[in-house]
Image 1 (tube, helix red, strand yellow):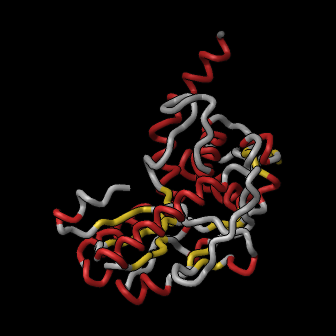
Image 2 (image 1 turned 90 degrees about the vertical axis):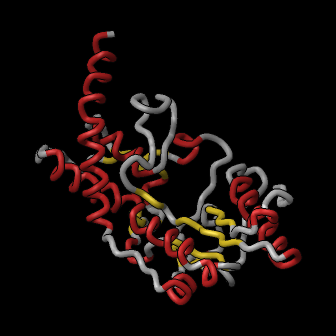
Length: 253
């Protein structure tokens, strides 16, 4: 990253990073200024993504410490909402694998079983995109309080297993689509089958919100049920007819 062109602007840069993956159960609750970054083995290639993110953070932090770069680093924890991802075969590649909410949405739109990777036992938190944007705006509007900080932006109160998320999404989609006959059908698949070789993950990942609450007074407001209802309402209105047409063409062919 070249900082030569940043300094003349005399402006603070805000960097959005994924929350770095950590494998040690002792650090399931992730603190920006305390939790160590622990990565998996080299042959698990997915860790290269987290490693690259951490290196960018270290470079930015060092530039701030040595040359006075004003910065804020944001670590998003599963931001979800309307228009956040693609539906395979509709507005993205058929062979593509989007994030979990879009994967499950795609299954629901096609009346297919929801695929649970390794049994869906991993635990995650989710935050509504509108709440996350509110946090970003507070950082922009309060540069003095945001400068030099790393902020988790997530909702620790929305923690669920991926299996529970699948069940909840099925209930919500039944409500918003008016299809009361939808059954909670799931099928277990291995991570190797779903993602391919080199995939690895952690069981649990929860953001600690102490720093952003202290510096900006921010907390997420939207419940998991409400954000799923808003998102799946959009998914149904936007994609249901297109998915039906795509499926009918496949049947004819």
